[in-house]
Amino acid sequence: MHVLCLNGPNLNRLGKREKESYGTFTLAELEEELRTYAFSQGVELDCRQSNQEGDLIDWIQQADDRGLDGIVLNAGAYTHTSVAIRDAIASIRTPVIEVHISNIYKREEFRHHSYIAPVAAGQISGFGQDVYQLALQALLLKQKRG
Image 1: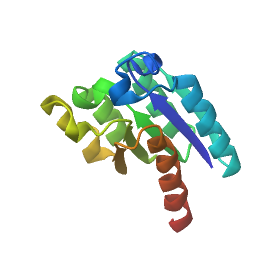
Image 2: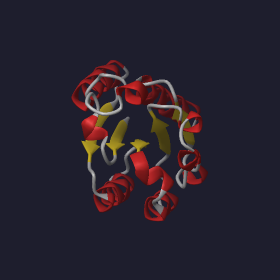
Image 3: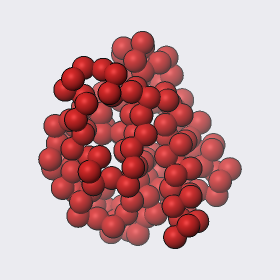
């Protein structure tokens, strides 16, 4: 199984920004823990981060073109604003699990709407960095059940 983990804008600031919402771990620490878990499950994992919407769209499309088995996506603020990312996900067959470190429904009203949720295979939020591992588990179960 081959999975792509994508992180959007400002997630490179983990460990420095809004620690009450996002915790004290860094993106590098999160990715290393996720890679360790993925390896233990026989999953090949590629992790990428960009503050640029177009990069995320390109990577989503490329994952499908390459026949990857899933995408774990934390689109950050683009979750609430990007029709373009929503359309990219709608155009592919690869399942996408939307993740959010914080519970977006307990935060500001504008964060309660996700353009991605209606086209994603599922959404996991509010469990801190564990949302990434939970998303990988969901993709593993999805693959196992066909």
